Image (cartoon, rainbow, N blue to C red):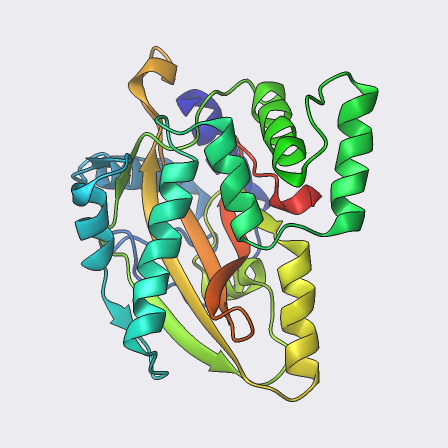
Length: 278
């Protein structure tokens, strides 16, 4: 995976044409594509050295992960309530555990349902797709999402998502928007913070709800956060484990009084999530 990842980084730098000024991140290092190509190898090595110097913790249920998430600072000009901050910690903890090595298909499916992925039309479409391949073992939304999750990770040759994680340089960046906003992918691209060989995964239902909310003239509170994840050693290539940045955008759902994810930006070569398909 590591060899593929760095090959994708190189291809991304060659193809990119963003001209915005870079912003320091990753310990003062910026992955901005406007740098001279003859500096590419130095840049790649700098990023590799930085992410591999980070202290990581295991992504597994327990006090260590809870305390690490609680220590992530909340920044921005938009205040949130103690209840919103607590729910933010709960959301990130539940997400990481649900898609960790120690998780299960049932736990992942339960998280999808927590996010409100109970759209009858989308569930029925996924059900028909799974049934046509003989992969369905039940007809409840939980059973359908469980089978869909298993098919997705099997198709990508994985049996996990997260092994270890670092929140160094991480912060919950809170903002309020009153008009239709750019995608997180586009915002990162314009600011020079787009990860190399990046892809974006949207929770389509929540994204449409956010747009409707903004178009109706109602402000929407967002939170964005970045962290570095590491693949488990048992799935690593002969060259060692890979560490990559993940970027998340979440929005506050006032009707359900909970945070829900809107968009993930991550590097190609990592497992995909089921959100995009439902």
